[in-house]
Image 1 (tube, rainbow, N blue to C red):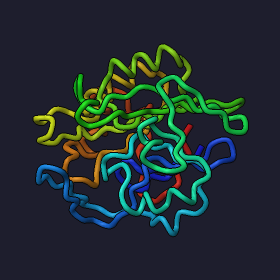
Image 2 (cartoon, rainbow, N blue to C red):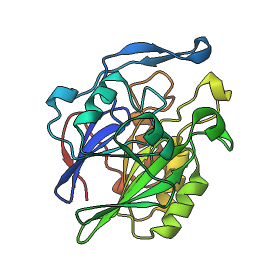
Image 3 (tube, helix red, strand yellow):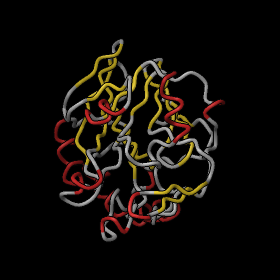
Image 4 (cartoon, rainbow, N blue to C red):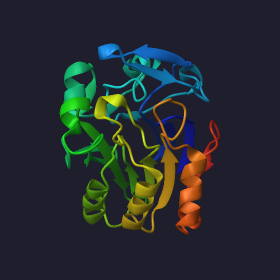
Length: 249
């Protein structure tokens, strides 16, 4: 499979002859007003614009409630996408979204997509930040791919690894995202937690996204790479250059 990191949590990849896109965020750098007077700040624009993206067959949307996962340009793109998979709540808010509960599957021309649990922060975070999902993709003669979504729980990664013991590629949303809304608690995996996840997912190739581009991401790609080097896991780490299609094994 080939993956192109567009920025933040947004990446496109080919799988089973189809093009998948994670968490579409294509706005230019800007600030977003949030409830309670809070502000989300995007620092870096996409490496590839939505107009340059080309046809997309499937969007894997971890959740629809935060601008770093679905912004205005991303929403404008959705009506052109044949299949959009996300949470049941997203399906009630956005026309055309197919909502999946955890462990529910969706079949697409020989590709099975399973929604897997994710938790966007500490226990109870879903009551404040909303329900989030990850995905596992499988198909005959295809690698098994795990897309974590905005998950901060290593325990949930263990549950997923137990159900899918042969994961080949894990696209991990990391960056240690934090906001005052949750008193500075981690809302996505830290680099150290990503190392824990990597051990649970062995021997999967680890592909980090969601580590840069927004002010509330606290651990960048360099920190992620350094942490994996210290853990002796560089042979399993696949770093991506923005806008460059990279073959991942």
